[in-house]
Length: 254
Ligand code: DGL
Image (cartoon, rainbow, N blue to C red; front, side, top):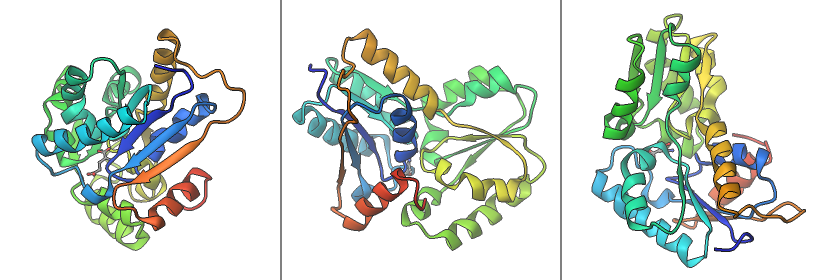
């Protein structure tokens, strides 16, 4: 594996951009290939077998492109397929996102907490292990069915209506919110608008730190002095999606 090769990063759509943004803050000089699997979006209510199959196809593509490491920037895919992929592709390091529930345990254990994630993540064995290990007994698990889809669509009105209907009952009742799907940090302000003052917990900055440590440990960190290249691939070849991806990356729109 070569230091100058790209880091492959994928999600079921553009949500993983919230992870890429955190990574770029500390690893701006790496090259990246971002794969958005919008043809198969959403992942949140697909079977484990289907998600394994979809993820494996993306991994094969990254390996063909000689990626030096792979970031699973999708909580659902991480929860269901990280182990499956690690077992099959042992030569390439996988860095996988997970809902930042342990952070609540570490920093805000006594406060009522709302975990927002896909149905798939909440029902997964991996998340349940995390949840039962760090349970503060004041936690509500909220499967946000369909939310990632409307974020992907970018329809603000639909998002606001969804959040009002689903989150209004928790207004003033929760202090911590775990953003357990990589699409959700994109609508962090809209969530706050419904819930009032809450503290958000997002695993992405920790993933970024961990990725940097792994690259250094394996002597794979790029030593280029200039900014790296970001290549975007969308499985449905949606030009609009590509445009939106780069706009969000530049801080325009959401
Ligand atoms: N962004 C993904 C996650 O973090 C999944 C969204 C979906 O496709 O359901 O879980």
